Image (tube, rainbow, N blue to C red; front, side, top):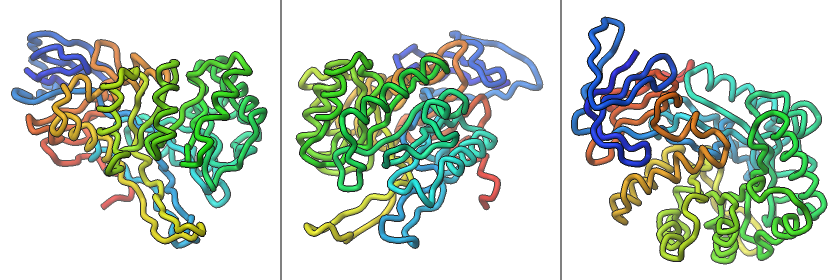
Length: 381
């Protein structure tokens, strides 16, 4: 049992100064004052601090990404402390370019390991390629029968993509949609978007030709180039979810793109943030030769949120949405995730006034307190 006293609650909407009681893995009460005198109840004096939902990161290479510059460039798996340090309490793991030396079996094993270590983890079957790599031999069966799997991944408009036809995209979207309905999951198709000129053309054709709901397709990395971003804004205004990859600088930074979207009247509740954590970033010359490679951190979503508040003076309740409630809706996890309300999972962040991270609570367990990580992965020092 955990009692957080006199904190400013952003749910993400501002609720004022409250006491918040956590019992087990759930939020039990939110009141002006809660008085308990139980030896089993830990009390945190949060006066002057801000309480928010934990970050939901819908795009992390939890088994490690990379490998595009040969075997020695494979990125290691994510560590629990890296996620906790970035305020991430819920994560969606997936594969990338490499669906050969990395497998769905490996992905689900890492998913289960991180769950055992204390955070909430979901996964997508598939990778960049088509036909999709799977656990059971069938995308539908993966989504229906594997608890952690909520969707499938595919790459489009990229030199590493399998260059599917519109008919193949329709079949994948239909399979994900029906499997999601049967299993009570979102049944999404996460679309890794490259910077090729065709952008979202195949997605538009698939939607025009079928009755597949637009919410089935989740394009990510949409700030990669101007044409893709323009099409993504239109996609959001039609009811689709678009995901912006944090950690990018310049014109493609999510903070800049969000401010532009707000100015232009784009549907702000359809925008989500992700880190692409542990995924490799790479630069190529005009002949397609790799010239530079690295990998992304999992704390970039939290950093982007702070940029919106501190640099662009966006109200906290607005800036939080892209990493909490919007993502929860897109994954069909709301109100279990993405908010501070009675009955929701106790995934919470406690911030100082300068927005530095004071404490992290995942599934009701204190993972970080007073800026110190308390819970690390099994083999972390």
